Image (cartoon, rainbow, N blue to C red):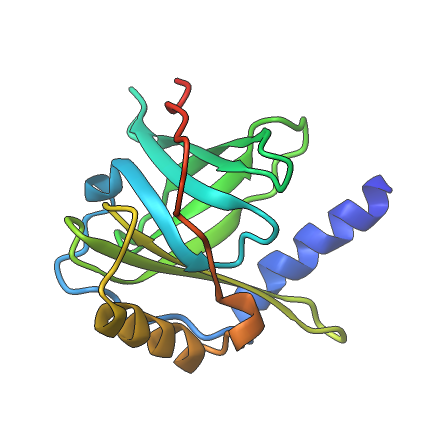
Length: 182
């Protein structure tokens, strides 16, 4: 199992060198520090959850604790605690899972944002000889988004190669939101 995980990481790292996944045009004036705070997932790759929030809490080292919270179909709480690590590019960050001993970062790119209202982020890992694993999220500082902005950001993620099934609407109705743990 460790061998498979190691091979996955090698292929994931190699994929960025081979340029098999599209990289979004950098957002003008990008400042990854401005993503701090709570975001509501309006649409994205989080399946089988509702009321999804993503919290980016600044750490002393300049990185972020990245917490995803949501409701499972039975109403129980789902939580995932990750580490968002700054990169040399202010338009991207690496995500590592803090709950495992093996940390294999996946790079997320900011496809578009104004930092105050909306954020579209994208990730792609290419496995040579297999396929691409793509993720996309459309987030808002509020638990809703205007239809025209949602359509614009959805079109942007589709232009990057995501398919409709990777950009599912996430219900934010009748939600009980949990506070982010530190």
